Image (cartoon, rainbow, N blue to C red; front, top):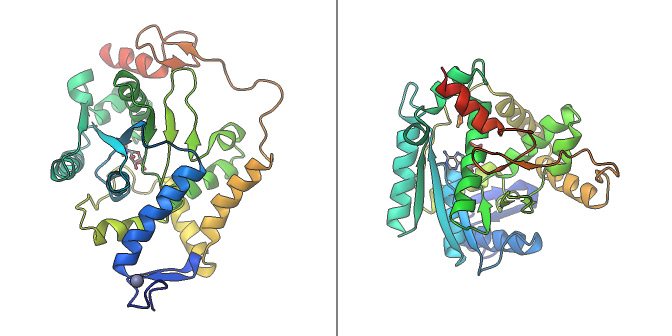
Length: 309
Ligand code: AMP
Ligand code: FES
Ligand code: ZN
């Protein structure tokens, strides 16, 4: 396979684009494409302050690297969850995130859940019984809450996450299997800021997971290879495997599934209903963040329950 740009030896073959690229051209192509999608979807401008949520995995470290190369003002946020079952997942991902920040002289905020709230994530999930077997739903709630809190408290214009196309396609698949209309309406690479919630963007939504892994490897970024120990056997992992089987038979299927969903939505397929089904947001009296609950938000209710344990 030859590089489509220079005719040299291709380092990666992207069957969905019918295109192979050599290392140098791929490392140039990926940030250029990212810039194209940032502009096309009006994610942010060079004078806005970006907070990148960095997990220590390949996607979010690559995203931070790309935004840096493209010249954006992007600081990082690492949320230390205290997931150290079997091996030091959280400690190791924090080490790699800090290493990347130091190497490139980047500003990193670290939030430590156990230090700030008195309980690490696995214990919090046990105490509040939100996740009966796995703490993943508690984890999602904690991460969303803390990301928005930091973005608000430090005055960032926008919050960026490293979700790639495989993540988005698996989420879309899950929402479609359940015809989860509320989620389908909201699933988009850009969510505008609303009622105290920061604007959220996913600049890597158009890239396959294997492309992001290739980018991180070819750039020499050291990232955590292991998945979170609680992710094993999750439905989203199963959906990703299913979509990859389809992709093997029909290159581009995964990309079309998600990108054509965005086009269909733009054409009005999932138009907002004329009657208001989206709940009104109130301000949580404890943390001051927006919530659809009448009293405390679900995060603060969980923390209260945990403290009474
Ligand atoms: P996940 O939900 O683990 O698939 O991660 C999706 C995105 O959320 C990542 O690409 C990061 O941008 C962000 N993220 C996940 N875990 C963390 C963490 N511990 N700290 C900061 N950001 C995170
Ligand atoms: Fe949150 Fe695995 S990263 S439970
Ligand atoms: Zn080339």
